[in-house]
Length: 248
Ligand code: IPE
Ligand code: IPE
Ligand code: MG
Image (cartoon, rainbow, N blue to C red; front, side, top):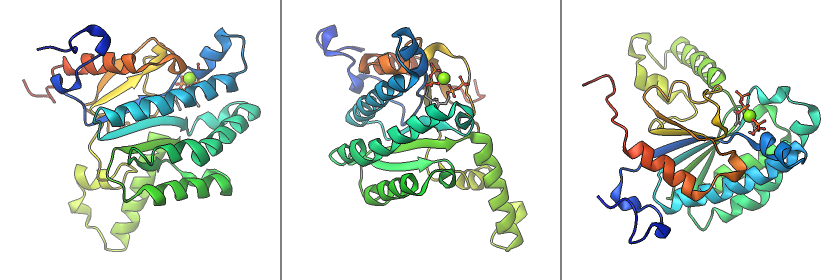
């Protein structure tokens, strides 16, 4: 099987490998990237945002159906005020400008996480982006903002309780499929592959339920340095894995 085009410079031939339908990325390492250069952490976040734009478009170009990126966790609010403020500012400018770009690629934008903690301007921009992209037919891009998987699971449990009390749902009908439908990722396939740049070997409260049988690839590059070729490398590793789902 020819994994690469005629010469290696052409990069990975995506038609020759098994592509994941759904990729998750924990966009980590912005702060260390900035520190290495003697820059403020917010410079790392700006550089990371550029990488986000590049890798999202690349995933769409090569035919990935779902991409979930972890942008801000429920735990990230505990960072210093000025860092949180600069992240919120960055999110705003991104939702105003960069997401406009994704129009050309027919990308459907969704936000997973609790929107209620953001200020009105940011929340409106999030809703506007979801509304204006919902009828497109390209890749689904889930942006996890104020997302925490434990928080998502608790929210699902509460909503299930309400529906059982209102007789909209029978307790005995609750199964894995119904439970999944109460999560932010309702209706979407579980991630096949989760990539974590920056070399950390942990999940940090990302897609806990959904990643029961996900393949993990940890990479040593910091997110702002992450290239299309690094994604290709992760895809190659993924395609060589033997997924058994508990079978033989
Ligand atoms: C990821 O980069 C971005 C967010 C969590 C918002 P970090 O800011 O966590 O970067 P490191 O891990 O400190 O290098
Ligand atoms: C995970 O990174 C969250 C995002 C990338 C948004 P963190 O940097 O917050 O995770 P820890 O603290 O290393 O576990
Ligand atoms: Mg980090």
